[in-house]
Image 1 (cartoon, helix red, strand yellow):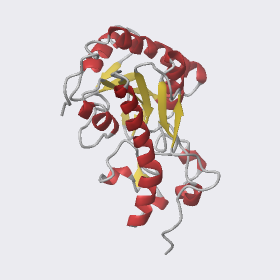
Image 2 (cartoon, helix red, strand yellow):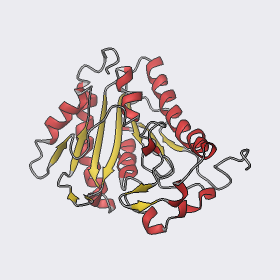
Image 3 (cartoon, helix red, strand yellow):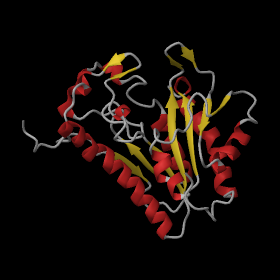
Image 4 (cartoon, helix red, strand yellow):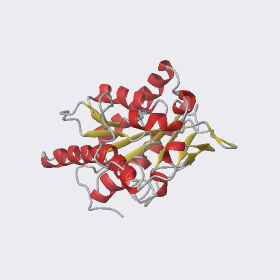
Length: 267
């Protein structure tokens, strides 16, 4: 077996995309599941296009919301380009859920019986570059005396199995609730929507990776938001929800809410 080849080749995207790299806005937006690209060597993971366009492959609409916010605030934004089915950038590499053999009842043929080398290629060429980019950008903020708010943008399927989600938007948090509690207070003033507070998803230590490792472990303020995907399928809906949520982020940035004097790492 030839272990010398790279997973990513000619015509493949880089591991991540960075917008407004040199922005001075104290906001870093990250999108773990924003992309749905598949390395050419993996032959679409053995899946059809309809499946690769579905919620199991990526967070539909999340990248568009992040792009709106990036433009609105001129904020640095780092987005993973590859599908979560290749490797999930919001999981620890020791977690079996980082490369799933099936998702929502769909078998992923190219993820079955992977050897160590095949797993390591995905980690080395996709997972690590994305997280190193986040780490380096945070270090730049801190070295310049800025304490950034780390905003993780996700989207959720309106239906998973037999469960229907009523929440239009949800805030997921754990450990550090500074930004979350203030955001929830604002969102709950919107009488026309249902807001999730750690439902249908919560931020889980030992499972979620990005916010716990890049923000909470370093004592940085953070927020993880989920938008329901059916509300983001058209550009009009995406812009509407991104614009509304921008008001929440604007408040956090203006108030700072103690962010200038961060406590030590929270675990």
